[in-house]
Image 1 (tube, rainbow, N blue to C red):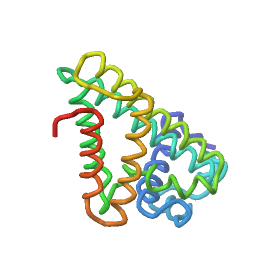
Image 2: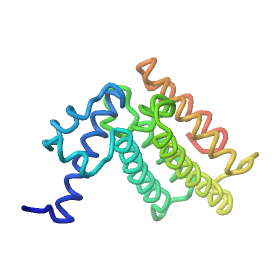
Image 3: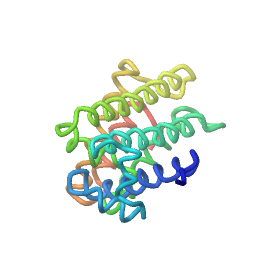
Amino acid sequence: MNTLSASESTDVREKILATGQRIMGGKGFSAVGLNEVLTAAGVPKGSFYHYFGSKDAFGEALLEDYFAAYLADMDRTFSHPGQTKAQQLTAYFQAWKDNQSFEDCQGKCLAVKLGAEVADLSASMRAALKRGTAGIIDRLTQAIRHGIEEGSLSLDDAPEIVAQSLYQLWLGASIMVKIVRTPQPFDTAWRTTAAILTLSP
């Protein structure tokens, strides 16, 4: 009997997760069956339960994987050499606008797509969303705080409150973009963000 090596096993698991993120990022969680994901990934159905105990467990792993990559991108953005925190925050929100397309987010907007849907369906997935979004807000808080310290930002409120408000603003704008099918809500969100953080347009 052949046994998958650790690296092969990891590759298969990551392939299932990447395929699920792409498909569910477009269609949602409930609308996509496991067979669709596994067929697209080229993985036998029997292999699924070797990696995930249930569809909910898969959804939780999907969100954990998504947020790990998202937070790593944030870390790279906020450590870019030769830029002030104001410039790094501008780059972050510009990337948000570029990635959260109403036409095809290619799995890059999983939190937006699944947030409201799965929060009422699965306690474990809601917890994964809560942890992931808390990580985003924490990184925004630290970037804003450092921007104040270096003098590139000026605020009238506490960094953690501003960070939470800005994340909620952009999350709402992402939903509105899907409704109106234009990027206009992002333009509004940016103007509000620039005013709050005293950023140049």
